[in-house]
Length: 88
Image 1 (tube, rainbow, N blue to C red):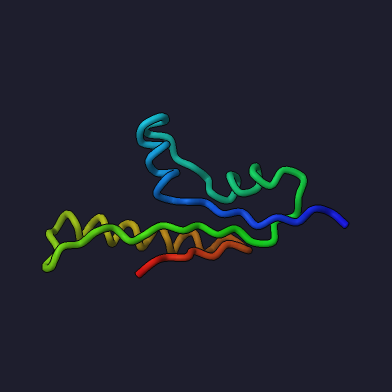
Image 2 (image 1 turned 90 degrees about the vertical axis):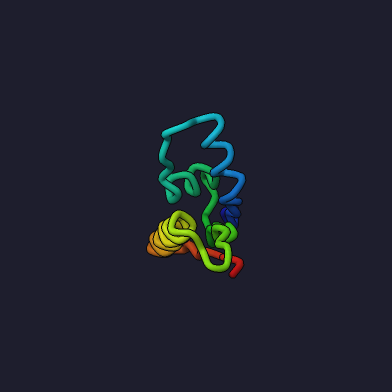
């Protein structure tokens, strides 16, 4: 039986590493998951990240950042076998 794996991607940590070590680099999250799995079969990839902070009432900048983040989370959902786990 071939190896099967579940991939867990900590979005906040990945964002932090990219921001400080590889500025202006964009990641293809599906390819990242496939690379992490190697020859193993991917059961599922989980991407988790908390929503961007918004004060009450949110500033325009906070609202824009939150909206952009939600669109990104929704875009991740199109990958077969990928499910975004978001803390709301």
